[in-house]
Length: 171
Image (tube, rainbow, N blue to C red; front, side, top):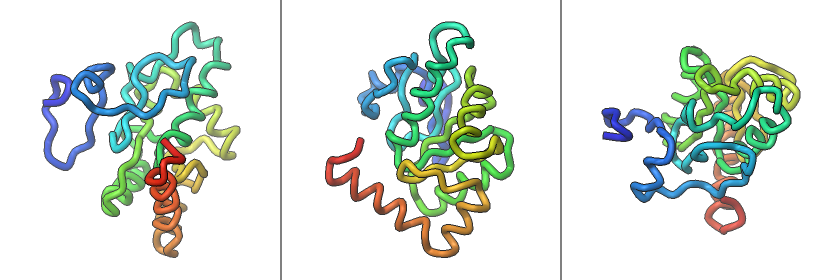
């Protein structure tokens, strides 16, 4: 059981607020001073809707950018996604098939999902999902990420991130 919800083997863990911290799981360093809720866990799969909300009214959009920008910096692979999107599922399956942990930020269940998408559009030139970041760099959508893998370029990007993490310079 995870946070009161049954978890099948091989299924992503859905984080539900602060419960995971009390169970001894380690959170990434929190550089999101303006964010409320638990930061994503390394190796965790999904950022919860209730844990990723910001304090204050939506008009305080200036607070959303630092929160959003911290995900690609604090995690090796980040997928900005929607739960019902076929291409998002395709991107997640690719990383699962490679046995690579990722953090999925589900925009359709996040209270600030629309604002996140606006910022992602400014950052990447597009609003469509998924928006995949590896090692802090935007690599594209699902087909772009698949193409990088087929060309043998995706795993080296991931390995660069893991080398940084293992040497203690990141996370």
